[in-house]
Image (tube, rainbow, N blue to C red; front, side, top):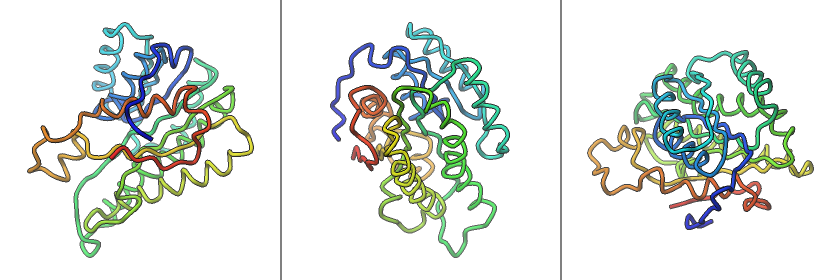
Length: 247
């Protein structure tokens, strides 16, 4: 799927879209783009101050008023995900989109040297949290006529590469989770499930992995927004169970 899609201005009018990792980088870009095209965006992330900044930016853009629901994927208990879904149910009644952008990379390391605590935290944020949140939100997505779940993947989750450890393993897991969920929901015909590899972007995660890289050579996170919008809107109907690359 190309990234040259031009979405209609009202593509996501009357849509409620939850975006994780919305305080920075890719999540912020997707959240602002969805809001600019009519969606009421639910901003989820671990740092309230960053979410508030994005909230203010969306309001300044003249977009629909968003909502903020802080949640720290690193340490949140299962009950907290259920409580978040309950708040959305009471306030909005349904979701038309769930976009997983939150990600964490603490270090690059040989498997020989990887410590268990870091391994578990990376898997928690990048794989287990998306599973729990998706599970909690499925009733909200089913309450819509049509809905879309987008997992943010990575080329490292399709072909493994040395030193990427738990991050790469988690992205392989995301690909598997997407495929399993897409197959399970196929017969219902209401919820589309896909994964996007956005390619190298000018983000903090990329800088952690490649601190000596010139960020000016990388694409801005905003460049990926059209692909996410297409999958979220009506023009994405029929796209289901796909592993999409924007590289």
